[in-house]
Picture 1 (cartoon, rainbow, N blue to C red):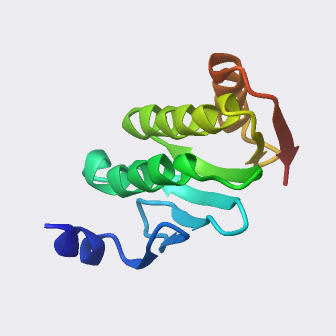
Picture 2 (picture 1 turned 90 degrees about the vertical axis):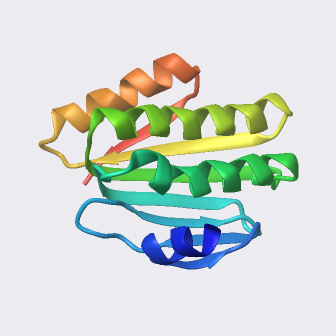
Length: 139
């Protein structure tokens, strides 16, 4: 089953130091570099099967949280995400909160299109729910 999952998601590399998933028309690009503590997600997220798409990401983050870098930086640059993806984004932030609770630094940058109030507002809601300080930046 994992081999089919990897092929289906266009995952270029999956191990506990690096995860790369190519962007598609309905899924975001994911680049997680565990060796440097640099995480990046960008694009559109409304996968046909949200569990199938996000499970490897959550599993990777869970493993990373066991031995994370002293500083972890994540950049979110979503153009759109549906309700199902919204829950998974919250799950990602919860994994990052686990890292923060271990006394490590977690920095969240939320990028949004200058004219996209919905994505900006979503980031503000996440920041309030997870009690993280987000850096907001328009582009």
